[in-house]
Amino acid sequence: MDKTNVTKRVTATILSMSLLTVMAGAAIAPALGIIKAHFSEADALLVQLIVSMPALLIIVTNLFFLSISRRLRTRAIATTGLLLYVVAGAGCFFVDDIYVLLVMRAMLGISVGLIMPLSTGLLAYYFPPEQQAQLMGLSAAMNQMGGVVATLLAGLLATIEWNYAFLVYLMGLIAVVMVWLWLPNEQLGSANKRGIPFEPRQLLKFHPSVVGMLLLMMIFFVFPTNFAIIARQQTALSSEAITMIMVGLDVVAFFVGLVFGPLMNWFRQPIKYFAPLFFLLGYAAYLVPSVTMILLGSAFIGIANGVGIPYLNTIASIKGGKNSATTVMPLLSAALYLGQFVSPLVVMPLSHNLFGADLTAPYKVAILLCLVFLVQVWATRHFQSLPPK
Image 1 (cartoon, helix red, strand yellow):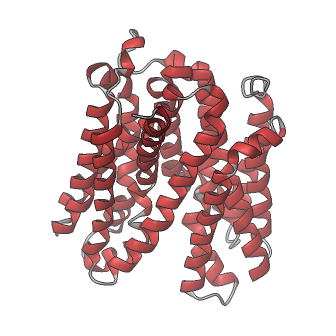
Image 2 (tube, rainbow, N blue to C red; image 1 turned 45 degrees about the vertical axis):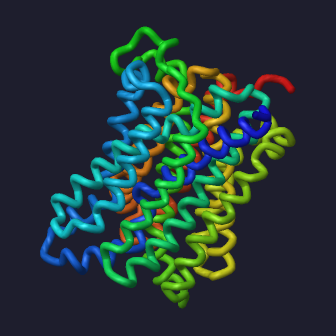
């Protein structure tokens, strides 16, 4: 078989997993209002956990990924994760008890915890450093596209009945077939003999990227948790228009991911500052209550997200080498979902304490976090430099 075709199939298989990972929570977010209405007698916190529960289990599973990779080969890990993804995700369609639903969502988190490190770490395993920027950009683009497709499809399905939204997870069956057909069966954990189940020294080695990912996701998640509420009060935009702006942000990030490889070559040193700077510009634009500035701010935040995630993954994969899937990528995945989970827990108290009842207080806190992110990037710049061309 032609080696080029084999490489393309392996790449497509790995990228198919990237398409699914963002859907753990994002896919159900548009249907949350309908789900809340169905479980009207349940505590509001339980309903919110439907979205956030997977993130907690993703973090825990990532911390055990090194041990898992010593016992199972890549195809077994990917197949187990993907089958659990389909069963736990789409299985919620048949559930009408909120506690059983939360158990299923926890299982979904475990599945993504198995898939996520492979979706980026295998790119570092199979491809040389000079190809990392382009491939990590494509991985991030597929991640964004998964968010767009899942958000639109789940929202549409939820109009039929609340539980139909969970059928969006059947998309995982495509990746299952691709893994069975084309993913090589490597033993990733064999090169790492120490550390049970998680090596703190890995965190020390890769802390610039890990802390950067944590800050990036804390800043980004100010957008999905606050934008719809604030924009509706700032402007006369309809709910449909606000939804389209939110989807448009993901589309911007998708296209930025597609061209990330050339961007990394053109701006090899300054690109490390792009994410915090564009986030800063985006949230600053949101402080002005006009549709034009809201559109501009959303575009800036889309650019920041589209650049930031593949940049941190690229730097980490180059530093981690072929062992990235069992060393730094689980840490980055854990940091990504930890950032999503803690963002409202940090931002909301700071908003009230620093800015009181100001409607745009969460955006102002995001700006302060952007400044922290800038300092973090500057302070760790010697860790984050790319090798020469």
